[in-house]
Length: 468
Image 1: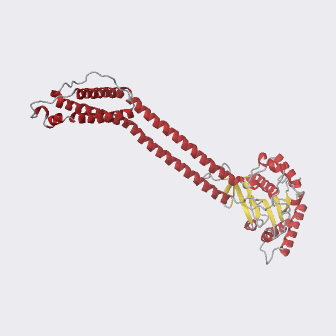
Image 2: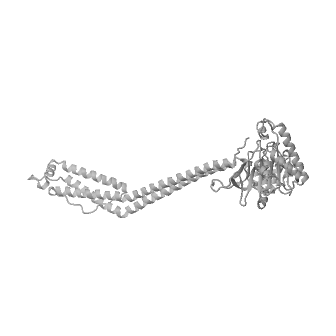
Image 3: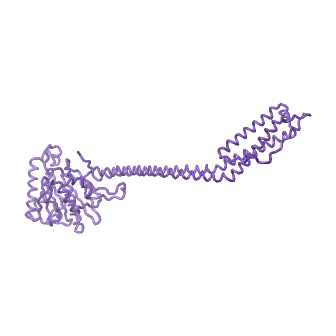
């Protein structure tokens, strides 16, 4: 199964898109909360307007009282219409019920006026100015008219008393309750919006982390727990890795995931050089150790042969335990051994150049890209170049530098920046160069904190799994 492979530049581009998606989600949340806040302010104003609504009811009741007084005055000399003085029942209603009740009172008053005017004599009397009219004989109010007039007056008195009681005892609490309900609804809506926003952000972050997880072993950090499944049954890759992890990418502007793997493009037609000064040399060697170990774990079987040159003998300690199909088991540490290793590299260069690299193919990598049976690459790993290289070895090294990459013989080395032993500029022209600085490392203009393999237990477990 082909594993997803892309370098950090491509990964960061995708992560930035996802980070922009989070920014949009957060902006939408901010706008949603702003809209909620605006609605909350409007609803609080509506709550304060409950008093205005109530005052409107009071004015309507007062107007009915005035109209009733005017009607009493007009009918006063036609019969006994005493004003009701005693409250019969002070009503206790909700605000909406009060609105309906006052509307009914208005309808009842209109009905009362219609009932009074239904008497033709009384209607003429009223239309001609009441007691200033031309009638010598005044019409009489019927007992039913008087009863209805007093009944309406009683209901109006009761309503006005109830409104005063509502204003004193219920209205402040109603307004406060309405405001509290607005605030509670607002807080609930904000909490729900925040929960939904966090769920959306978590989903985007999960997709961001999945981009890294999908890379598999090629980008996995050196933590024992992450490699347990690999150790139980080492899955050999079917594809030559196009990227290799060299550490954690340094970029404060990307915060969507915790650590971003620094995935350096890795093509077997370029040497790999780590340039370091004395102060960073040990860290550079640890980085080389990590890179080589990662290649051992992730390279397909029979895709490459390793040659290990380690004068100190402690930088590439896993070399002798590397799988046989990758050409391990030998570490060269003296001048004769180094000469022998380089001579083997020159043999590969001559053979591959004659048989596979020439007029048809620009490099062994180009040949392998179309070949059914791949020719293994030769990876010469040097922990301290040019330590231990005598003049003969340095001469052979020049040939490896100039002709090796095209023929599939790759130099992977830690080099002292101050070295004068060979043409460093020629090597840099033919290599992917990792530069060490006092604070970090960089490659292709991208900064990273270097990877280092320090867990010997993990190293041994991985090698044992591969050899098995």
